Length: 253
Image (cartoon, rainbow, N blue to C red):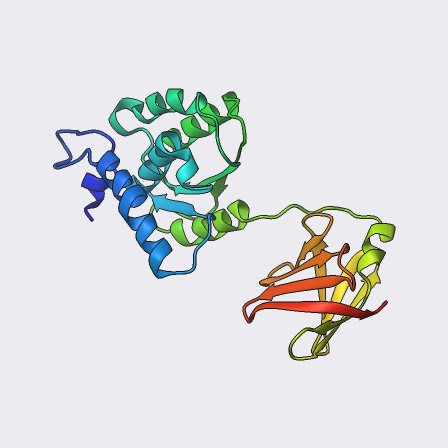
């Protein structure tokens, strides 16, 4: 991969071999993603991240192939490339019907010389009415062009993978309270309700969880998700964590 060649959408004489973004995007779509799907356990959650020329390419991919990824994190983007050519691709993007919502996070360091281009990018998105596109732009203090990547990528992932936080009533939450037993190992999990929040007691440790939907919950800062099936008899709970997926049946209310 050559950054100037693969990340830029047009040829600029002052940048040798530039202008190969479309070929690189097609490689990702037609070869890389299918290959990863065959070799690894994947799902449809895909995020594209890039900085500087990589940020330009990330925005180019957003406008050209929006359904290829559901999260886009361009940082310190060279978005003014070739007299703002990038924005010409947005015209086709606005006419496309997205198959799923998209989240965009973009950041720049306060000492970055590309700040004027970043401000133009912010202004552009704020003036548009792109359906099913949510975005967040941030200027990060005490960082420059080369140093912004770590912080911006971290906050970008936080944003694009953020889940809803529903405020469910005690009446709805109380449906899940009880003791659940693993279908295979017989291990137990106690689900309790405290201050309008469910708590899962796993191996003697309490895990407060937040509602993403009426039946799906997650823990902040950890890979722990709990889903309930209130129709099943007995009621079921599925726990997903780094350890894998485990299924439980409620044995006591």
